[in-house]
Length: 386
Image: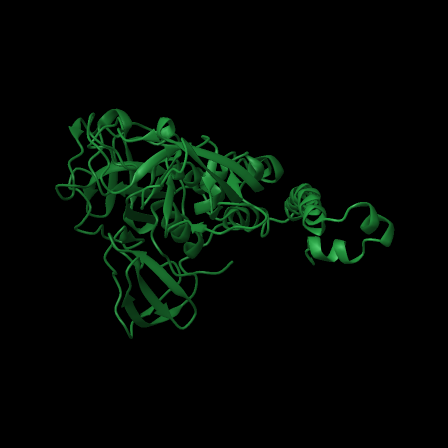
């Protein structure tokens, strides 16, 4: 869609108005204000149109311009939190954040791609990920802002906010009533495909990959090379290029041919894949060789897939779709990388608690892995595809 610019409107202005208003700069600014409102309406209409497609529906709504006023009173130099928390970033009470200055943002803010110092004639443009980071309801400037007065005003360009847009448009049809924050990390088109066509092995592994922040292949791919950059490690295949966070270890090598649904980093690992005998990596209280014993329930190892993954907070909600989309009478289990307190180990769709198995507390398979969740479902096919 062609974008209308103030100068184009100015060129069409008749001689009558030119004689009434002598200042072209004033008219240009007035046009810019009118077009700004038009741009927001255009964005909203576009989102409504694309919202009927599972492939194009946007996660959240876009605000063309939003004004922020930053001052010392809105700075967050002290953060309360549990230093042992598994999710997000937390600090001990009284500890100063020495890597940047944080400011509060509206709670529904998901992303702020750019910040301008002026809408019409900007002299400075700050970029997300380079000049600042948006996370956990706050914005952290990597270089402290300088105040000419008591505050500084910046304008957010194309700010994305969580409005429950996906859930209200299409999500409710497949009972995916999740926040737009989840759909930013877990593509809705994948959930829609699983709910309408049925889940394949690759789809299920990709879903777990998205929920744990683990790059996962979508096709049978050949690993061509890996390259370590300042912000991530690239895994380059003949089909795609995947970005692996620096805090994760790449789990594939150049020249390796991997099937669809392969985890490419250490954040998730396939422990057992429908073999007749359980892997030795499965904890002994639940590992009975040919049978996976979970409390009073048992399941043949040949019908199970068991994954070790560090599922990220609210993203775990998307895993509920496994229960409804995969065939019955088998199970998919997920183990956590980190030990979890018994009261919080069970996800909402777990059929029974994870405190004990046959009266014995479930130990970690290693010092940092504990049983976390399960779904009473089965993968229908041994290979990818419909």
